[in-house]
Image (cartoon, rainbow, N blue to C red; front, side, top):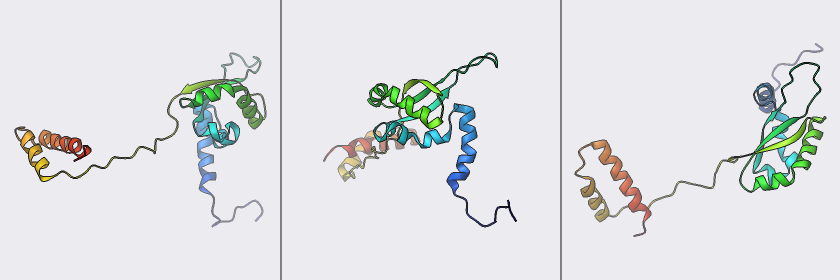
Amino acid sequence: MAGRTPYGNPVPVSDLATKILDPVLRKRAGISIGLVQSWEEIAGPRLASRSRPEKIQWPRRMHEDDPFEPAVLVIACEGMAALHLQHETSEIINRVNAFLGFTAINRIRILQKPVTADNGKHKPTFRPLTAAEKTKLSSTVGLVDDDGLRASLERLGATILGEKKS
């Protein structure tokens, strides 16, 4: 029985996902999932919430005998985080190299773009229209012949009128 895995023991989904995603990330972005998962420890909580490692750009080797050259780590970040990231570049390079176990990175390229999903914006709620507003709206768009266009204009008008305070 030695060497056989017992059936029925649960395997964490994160282990399965890591086994699937790690080769894909290595091939497409030159980055390991371990670096992405440990980004908060590497960059610190303040920068990790506004940035993420995108890819590692390894220099092309023309021949097998060419000496090893460190790569460029591309980090996506938002707004002011770019300035903080720029000031802490050397520290982050040292932490990434310590994480990887060798001098893999010698530069960081900052790519400004949205990183976090904006969960703060929610769909606004509109007040219900009064009977007078409904009749005025329907009489305004009532002359439109196309039913679909008329319905769209009514929804637009209801939204505009619903935003205004009564």
